[in-house]
Length: 77
Image (tube, rainbow, N blue to C red; front, side):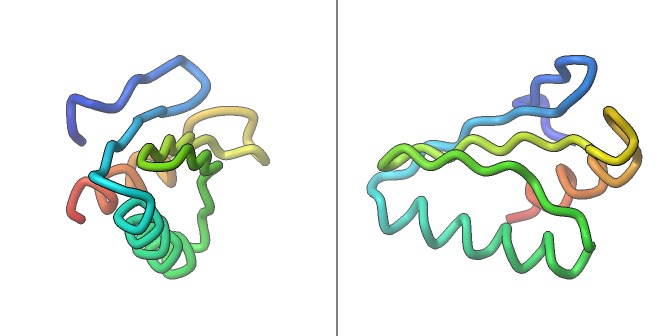
């Protein structure tokens, strides 16, 4: 997993910065495809050219292997 992820104890959080809104949205769409494939969906905040992903398994009340697997897949983008 990339060192850019912050482990808050109950979630993994990372901000991604792009050159513009279109780049941010293209990234979000790629994340959405991975999330659908894995059946595990992040919280996504979009602010013009910045995307913040928060990974947590809500049904488990915190971090699980699902979150770390999704973070690794996102790192591969």
